[in-house]
Amino acid sequence: MTEKIQIRSLAKTFPLDGKPFTALSAVDLDIADGEFVTVVGPSGCGKTTLMNILAGLETPSSGEVLVDGQPVVGPSPERGVIFQQYALFPWLTVRKNIEFGLRIAGVRGTELRQRAQHYIDLLGLASHADQLPKALSGGMKQRCAIGRAYAADPKLLLMDEPFGALDAMTRVTLQDQLLETWDREKRTIVFITHDVEEAVYLASRVVVMAARPGRIAEIIPVELPYPRNEETRLSAEFTEIKNRVWRGVHHQSAALTPTA
Image (cartoon, rainbow, N blue to C red; front, side):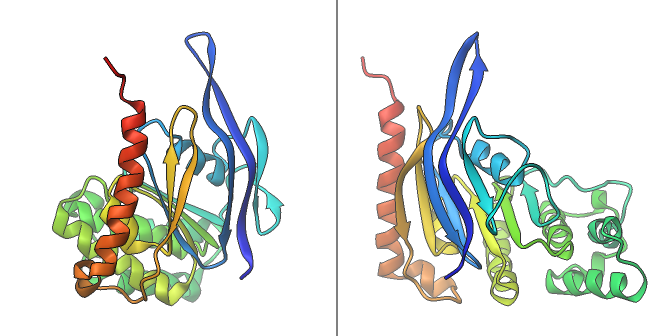
């Protein structure tokens, strides 16, 4: 498959208390076009720093990130970003929020309305399309944020704990909707999460990161067929992969715990 993302010898150092702090060190990773990859690891392992560099919001200290063979040198509409905080415009309706990126890109008229309506329908927001975000539940707000990112037609979707603040049932529902949307659109997705079950359920590969310094400890393939559903979650194969990922994350977390 064609590589969408190529990360080569990536490192990022920040000043901390007058000393350099290495957030990422020697990160190498290829992600194929249309692949769904999740990233897990203990707090402080550089997951969000990696995401910010992919988004063009941070610059590497050394190494490089290529998307479609081109260096990432700043934000781009080709890379949609969704954070845990919904980041919706509170004065705009659901429809206007979803239209926002399209308007910035110069889309107008019938095309604007049709593309926005496509994602309103796809994400089950039709009955709330003309409401302001304050009238929406957390799950609906996140669906709106996903719709806005998708409508702008990015080739790469970067998601940083997008379901982290939601209740368990809403989270499962949005996981299923995200997979359905991904299956139709086949965009490349990089998804950060602290939830091991979520990481395994969504991804074709799970990247387990280690901290101090942040680096890739293990990449675990998830060889479960799509589409996935409740039977997937209850299968022995799913449990086996989930346990393997959990052991990887737990091992990295334990390595950070000071000994007496």
